[in-house]
Image (tube, rainbow, N blue to C red):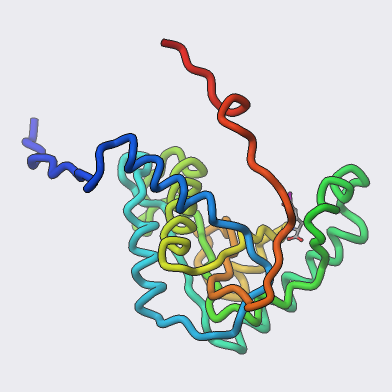
Length: 217
Ligand code: IYR
């Protein structure tokens, strides 16, 4: 058997005790909202790089890190993505979506207009790798990429950036427009930037703890 190297854990110890640290983080995270009204105020590439690095710290099946984050600021590419996304969305709103689905979406005021895809300074397209870049097996792909995406969204929020988890369906056009290889499957399209000064968001609530948690002690 080969020896696999190990190293001492360097624990992260918050400045406050766990209970206070957990509440403080919750108070910050609860202010994240999905935003569809962006400012065109620029965001540096370095900011996006840090946010992507944060997403890339996610745990994944056998640490295969089966994700790729494609960050787009090129206006011509953003335009192409918008045009293609809006074509899919028109199909969705006019034909594919059931009456019930449209009714469920009504409170959010979404529609086929995806101008945020051009206004936001950056689009981060998350791809799930069906296999590693060298053809190896990946494990728990959706779980892994879902976690990394959640961490990416959290990192953007902590940097003061707004995001929307946009899932045009089908998303195949993203791989085509961006010229991504066959083994990369588009997972989510995430505009990132500062919110518009007059941005509004739907008045919605999150379920209270009693409705989302069960304690067995
Ligand atoms: N992809 C469409 C529709 C949509 C679906 C769900 I479920 C949402 O939570 C929001 C939107 C769109 O982006 O408009």
